[in-house]
Length: 454
Image (cartoon, rainbow, N blue to C red; front, side, top):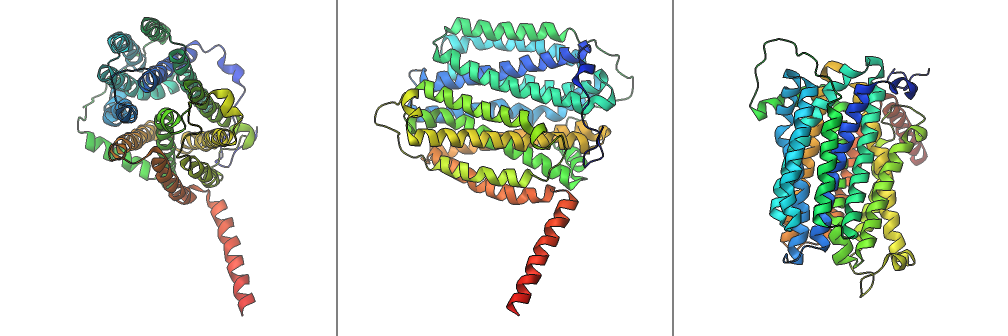
């Protein structure tokens, strides 16, 4: 079995996982939870954008932006405490309690869907975010108890792939159900059923006895974050990888939040077209994630990261150039597929998301392969805080700029400029041998240029 550039063996055959019932219980539990989170959020955003009455159009874009921030804020606030809980109590028991709480949360949210109350749904969304923020550290901490150490990389790969598919499925099905005018009660019933199913599956996790060691909770959020920062900062490449992951989710959050109002208010397309745009976006990320192993030939490396970040810039700038409607009347999907401008927009969406999938999966794998097992949970917690912080920031700054009268294309243009800076920043994550090759190459060019001038 060949080794990668970090000295780690490539993944083994997946057959060894087929009989590991606790692992698959965790896999299905997190899949259903991620599906429900994204189904709930997408249904809320689609309802708000296309169906809620009594809300001014200019307020809808701000509500949509705020929804992403409200969902991610608990990750920013509660990740350090969630990590402590996972260290102190049975991880399986924490997961079961969290999934039980999810049933109560979705039952509470039914009022908002039935009576089309966006404020009530925002409160429910915050609670869903809190549930997921506590679930995450327990999930990652439980995994080493379910599978042998030599299979951890493969197990994490399965978990991440499942999460991507859950996000895609929840996002797409949530939008489709609203488009097909599913009744609020049926919508609430589905969310409630999935929450109950997730709780039942979580019961397949057997709580392990917790070690009886002295443990004191650290309630100072700032001290906890400083400790996580110190651990992550020990390896500059690991720290840069966490920044790269946070930036990826910032761009994704901005695009997903602004895609509904961009499609309706600027491009002037029908709801079915927006759903197709959403499908292209999720298909692109999913395809990029799935072909990573083939594109990089199973190698765990970051040497292509700056190039992938660079390739996203033209697509972002081109998206920002769409500032006027495709037509005077709302455009159908058939019409968009026959328009040059429509095809160009779809190519931008798909290529950007495809490159994003190729960009993010190697970074996750790099963290899992590079960081020592005793520090991995702390680095993951810090990465979650950074991701949440970036997403909350872009959510609220977008709402603020939109309230000042700035346009959605302007927000995307600012993001494209930020992507250019990020591409330069990610050069620092290149392996030493790659940096050495580049340095030698540019020194040779400079030397030859001087000889020619002389």
